[in-house]
Image 1 (cartoon, one colour):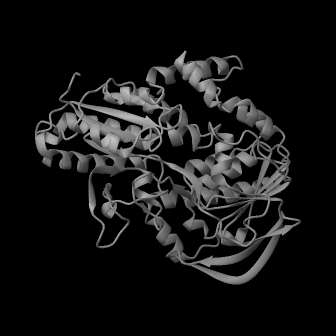
Image 2 (tube, one colour):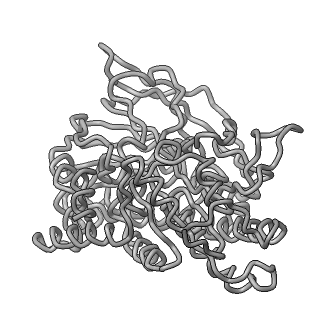
Image 3 (cartoon, helix red, strand yellow):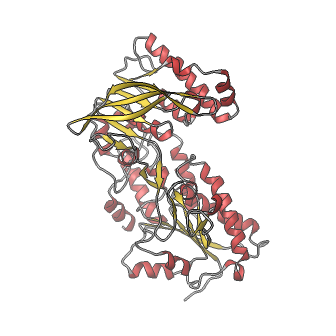
Length: 483
């Protein structure tokens, strides 16, 4: 047995939150380790239940986001570090337990993402043709255990939600398959599915007003450039009072979003004036309606299937308070997609805060607690959470960086106070985890294995003049990685 004196950290989840935290931990340890009495050496083992890394970047964001390839490239550079070891295809709670990790690591950091939708909670939500965004996103992103086919036979569809996921879902439902294939890494089944999509009319319903939506400017700009799609808005939605304009102006991102929405209003007017065209002035064969101050109240059905959606007009004050008006309208649709928030994953043996939808942690500082809240909530030593696991399903990918710095600072502070300079795991043999997994027949996919999958995807893409083409079958990923 070769015992080592480096700090040992286990991170659960190899998405942006887990990778950023690993990188920041090593950097901060390099800067502050000597001063804190920790030394400057650590080994971080990153455990991921899927056969490949990158989580949300690979499987949670629409494939046509131009910035995604840059983020994935940055994450990959971080993983190509001898002090970070990747263990993909290893599921926490099934292949390895919390006690087994605590025996071998000085601290365990949870950076698990979200896999489920928040329930819609409207009458008719259980009708055939009502879908949560998460499952649709899994389909078009080629999630290893996701659906391989998707029913896209509705000519009129509704999307509910005022955030970026709603925008992604709406955009993919209005997409031209050939345009999408040319620009992205979508697999063949997604291309064929979108090519056969019958959707001609889409209604996006946002409960609050123009100034209270949660869209990023990038999302709006992507919506503006959909070939064959005419954008249609309601002029009244843009009649903002002085207080609302003043309030929106206080926050830079909100101000930029509102300015972009007003640009979309002008674009929509031009599209109509030019004879129902798309952004390039070509005839549009699909219509995309954007409804603000519109709260869906019921999904109407017939023979168990969606036939319409009932929507109540609302008003929104400058402070974001929504008021219902009692005015209703019905829109004929055959499918309803709801993107009203995700529910981050639970973790076996860790308390969960159901109300805020994240792992229980002390005052949002990332230190895991025995229960969600109340006087009985005690901090559990050596256990931490970051990203959505810490704060719930809010914030963009960039938010995970600031999260990571806070959590890493707390981890280093706690480790410096622990006995023997934070080296508290009883089993310090660096090969111990490998032997444990091997004894269970678990074959982790490491960074070199991921690079084999990536090389294959690039070669397959090159055959079609594309940069990349996703492999979606987990067995194929394993065969490629272990070859």
